[in-house]
Image: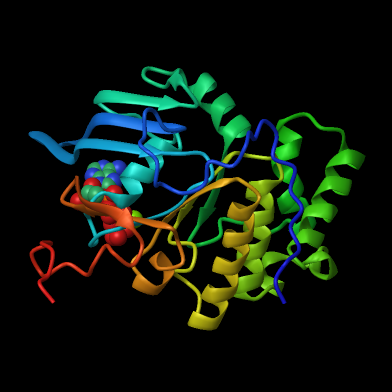
Length: 265
Ligand SMILES: Nc1ncnc2c1ncn2[C@@H]1O[C@H](COP(=O)(O)OP(=O)(O)OP(=O)(O)O)[C@@H](O)[C@H]1O
Ligand SMILES: [Mg+2]
């Protein structure tokens, strides 16, 4: 049974779901983004000119082979990492050259993160893990607990509130992690291989949760290696060696050949 999400998305206008209309400027707008990692005696270019517009309310998969730059791109979108050149506007605000403090403020205001390895704190209960972002927002304890319990309830996890992560299944851990990502009412969820550690049935359940999250108007961006996960998103972007080689409706973006080109069949 799927969760019954009734999320309050602050500041959401009329639905602009889908990517059929022409983009002028998306909620997340990248232009010519380049990023290299410093390397002994040089540097390793990883993003080589990324142009990307994602509208509020879209559900987007990012695919591509290992090392193609997917996580790096997600980290740039999530203000977890900077970039060398190009432009990034988030909700119309230029994100270039933010201080760490400003980036942290935008992250806590706009963004929620979900990871393959869940990243739950092992010695805290499910409830405490979900409540933690509110602690950093200085929400009083009682209110934190009330909201965390409510969010766990929306994930169908309120009966596991007192469990430590080690006392939860993989799918349950990811539900807790999604509840933690949602607790601050973000407008965008960024998920790096959220189903990468889960079996296919559990992956499907987690994708159902993320689809419900998206149905409330929250933009969802998912890095995945799995075509059937990407197929559950509306749009798929394929990276190859630091550039976007395909961008289209999920299902129309086809499996690449070994060289990353579009296959003929
Ligand atoms: N902190 C870092 N310092 C140096 N090089 C890095 C760093 N992080 C990533 N890289 C390199 O950048 C390239 C892209 O890495 P990234 O993690 O974005 O790939 P990915 O597409 O997410 O791969 P995977 O599917 O294996 O997770 C890789 O060649 C990687 O070795
Ligand atoms: Mg990665």
